[in-house]
Image 1 (tube, rainbow over the protein chains, first blue to last red):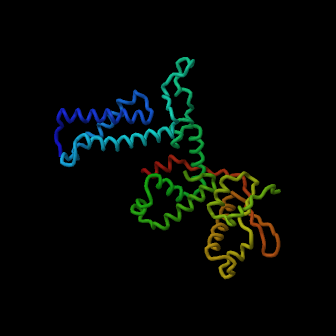
Image 2 (cartoon, rainbow over the protein chains, first blue to last red):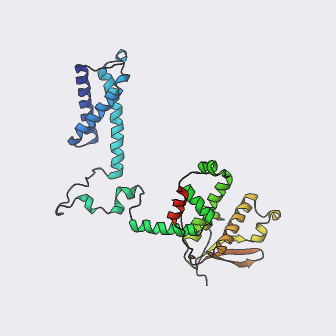
Image 3 (tube, helix red, strand yellow):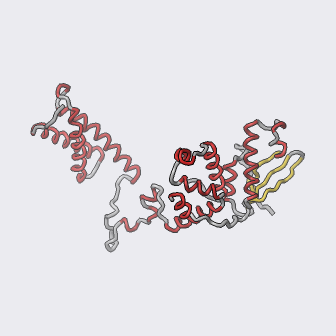
Length: 191
Length: 113
């Protein structure tokens, strides 16, 4: 295990990181502005793994080359995934719109088309209020004990309720099934 | 008068309890669903052996749920005779009853307390 790194070794690592980063940038057709970020990413990874370097098994350059090749593959995978998600040429939301009187692209994106909505987070305040009213109406259709159980399940899971209330697990599951069906009949689907 | 009756899909002859509740939840008043075709009284009778035990158990659940929904004033239950021992059992959606809403905040606060 290597506890410190010599100046020559550091130069080797910087050189390897530079080569690997340029290769990756070229392969993925990334902007040159990304070069420093990618290089740093590769370098940080190889430094973090330096304690595993064993000089008896090969040179530092070879070790760094393998680590960086692996890291580069992961970076490439991440970039490809982002491209699948956002398109080949992602555009910054902060980029000004041409002839937009200073408006950025982000200003033109509706909240419902944003990332939060994409990941299923509620963004429509009116829909939220309506959903809450629907939930309250659905709870009103339940037996008061079942409504209390529903509230309890928002804070605890079945295991915790079994421990806390010494209730029978099968009975709780049966009640939950009934609650789900009653809410479904009231127009409330499970999330 | 019922204008349209939703038939069961041919690929899947019987609906289950969840399907029925899902339909009730989204049906507009007046819409009808044929939730069973046969002779319910006989088909749910274990000695009759007209269905497998599994099918009979599911039919019992659907029938009980339909009865529950009619008690909750969510649907009307009617039947149409086609022939001997052959009926369509129909659920007709009613206007959603106006339940007294339960306060979500009160319930959650009571649970935390």
